[in-house]
Length: 300
Length: 235
Image (cartoon, rainbow over all chains, first blue to last red; front, side, top):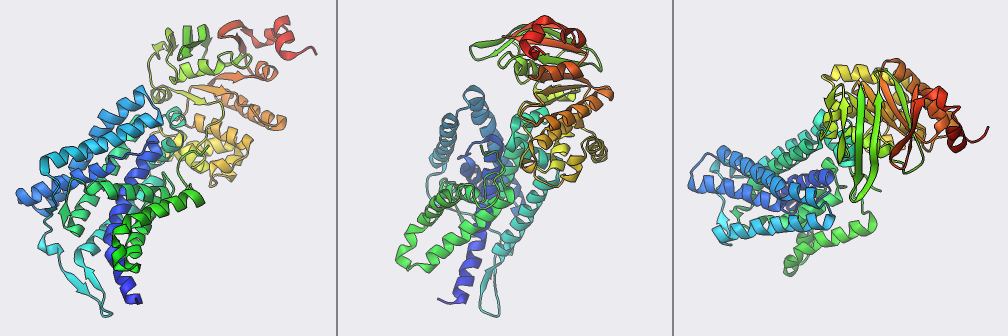
């Protein structure tokens, strides 16, 4: 086990970490603003991937159109879930448990619906040849061209969103609503609109993550959002809930950590990969429940 | 400028306000005093739109406020510094003020307004880069008031601005409230410290158990035997 091996594993984990980072931002924004865990976020991601897959595999569309379809599909599903599940639920019975179960139900319902329509088999996601290819460095590291694209685009997106939340008027309003929605209303902020913005923004990122997943893993399935969604949620907790840059960092830590965990253990242990994330979650909850960075919610 | 007519309101099964009538004229400072649980904060929340009255009406500049959401009420020119201050602890002092000016037209306008607020409360300028949660109680109250006047309100609702503050800080805060009033902003002041409220206001409503028990010019109420015995103590 040498440095080259570890470096190669880290490089292999970059795309996975990027996907987790994008999804974790969605979880953290919605949790911060609405105080609810949007378990259906993984399914928003999955449906985005299917939108791109259907257009690319059967419609023969250009790759960019597939990407836009993933964004559009994710946003529509995200807004639908907000309108038809969360808004009525919060209005009638804003108890944590009710919303929690509704969120779980939306997640399972969508996953089952897609399994019913498409079956549970893996479907090959077509990545254009122009994005395929491997670079080999002098030291012998292998770099997938598509992984470089994914990492680069995600980095720009994460930076952009972090700056937006930090400096823009809407971003500041988002942080204010996350901390105290009532006080934000009293400052003239339409908190319902901010909630909608958070869903739209989170879903856009889920759409990007969906295409990145398709490119990186080469397949889509109706259950693709389940485990990765949970991991991304834990990444959001790790980064300090409500903290957007924190969620991104959390995503990379979990993504890279998970891969390294498998890489450093003997091969027969590779099936215990999910355990790493749960161990990490327990560790966070025991040692520092607020996460690595400052949460952006009011802690009583 | 603001008129409440027979307003009845409450939470769940409990009725808190049993028919409140009050009015505030432009530029006037009106105090609303009374013991804990009398319904003072609920009255404020009816005006801000946080609580919907069960019956009765609230007029602002001769328009019915009924059913407006809080952010829409703010847009009409009514701002509130709520009880317990409710500043955004995760935001810096400057960001708190910027959020307070959310409805202002431009960044330039927000900057000018922040300068104006900080002229009034110089401490806020000194602390502008700090997280608001790191402020002292008095500074947080000043920030809550500063944030409320960012949107250039015509009517300012202040709920217990003296709560939990040292007397010397209370004096400072009240001095500033006087200055805001001299800018022509009408103020509805909810206050448990009745002596203080009578001093700064032109008219006062005394509220007990969800009803207006007494109302009148503050100078008269200061010598009203009931007010003296119940709220001011025998001097």
